[in-house]
Length: 391
Image 1: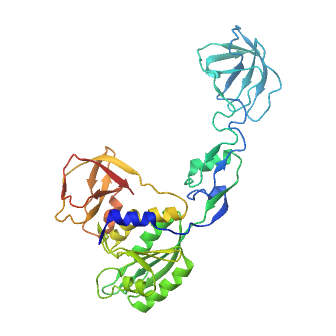
Image 2: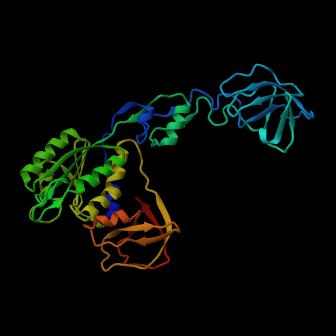
Image 3: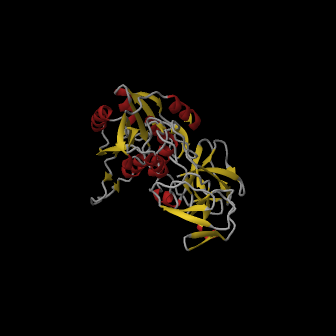
């Protein structure tokens, strides 16, 4: 059994083949990772433009009234140069006319008989200048950037309709257990529904990868070996839950060794999630996850997600929330790092949720974060300042 810190170091150093690059339509790019820098071919804005509805004037013109020479709508081109005693009525986003270097907002003016009079105070120039947001030739976004809706808007504003991204990693998911049934099927005596494949699959999709779901595998060596051989040819990562602990029918670690898969660890000092296996075979990474659903969820978040994201060109950094522990936390045994589901409240307080152990999946629906309790720590007193990992 190795400490969680050692397992993280092993995974940080592990070598693997990054996914290939493809070009996708911009509208389909959210949740993908940029595979090349986005370099602007234009200035943004591409011209000096009005920041609001108003009147374009010469800033040092102290005329009592201004003749309106034209109306400039967004998308139109000014035709007259502004001189003293003149102005142009201009709309938000419209091109500034030559000669003008200020826009007086419409709320500070009065218009009558083709003339404009400044009636209020407006000290601002109200102009968005050419290139003040982005300059031509500037790398606006760099490779490895996770694409969100704001990035989509930025890329669109630069005129790109397609974007280079890393391909989604293909992740094979399987659950072992003769007692497991798929949702939608009737349960027999001693049977339970397959929650792991669906929970883990949702985490994989959330990470931006694609799922190859193989279904439930019976607890026998031949079935598991045949499935793994197939997935090793088709995927970049395999996540198999169950069959990795010390039970009579837990075949996975032995099968992996027989297949020539190099194992780096078989147990991790983490609670929940101790029976976690990691190995590699050629270009495929393989995690044997515990069968208990909270354990599988936790191990994915702590160990699997960072590696999976790196495989697709993205360095995942969990969001840490700073807060105050609302009540005392105690545990009897402290030989492993504990990962505790907690609720992070709006007032900044942290409160462990009611948790009955690694099979208590519904507890996670009440949690918004995970609290890490280091090895050797039996108690964290109420009022302690902590950082918890958002989920």
